[in-house]
Length: 198
Ligand code: GAR
Image (cartoon, rainbow, N blue to C red; front, side, top):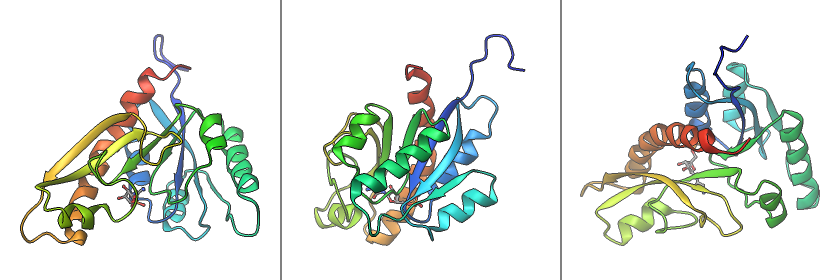
């Protein structure tokens, strides 16, 4: 039984396309007693995503739906149905490499967050670390933001940055920023869910 005064955990769904290390960091953080959320579903557009395997091995329900051979609306309706069936209240994108339709975003208005590997508003889209290096930036980092219809354009909830070093390549930068992503995402998702209306 829940203790007097303690609220039920928020039910988080996570969408992934690949490795799922950010998803794993969210799941691991959720195991703390004072974490405000539990991960009730990890869903993927890639049935072979390694992250799905990790989730299953850690007791998290999974759902896979390839978008191949069907209209985008049908694919997203299936993802949406799986999320709702799991009781999901909010969605975290964690390396989900597919654009969500305006319809899907509207159905989950202000209830989807994403982690992006740049210091937004710089470098929306792909190849963020190579672009930061090419521009001669001193800093790289990651951003957690609300998902809107504009790619990587929603309200910024939190950022973390590191100094770029002379010997950095896109790969070493990605590695070092990823460490920051794993710290930032669970903290910001927790803060966000603590104030999200029920
Ligand atoms: C992460 O670096 C994440 O920020 C990035 O993909 C990687 C996924 O790694 N996301 C995007 O580029 C979204 N546009 P992960 O699967 O190990 O979490």
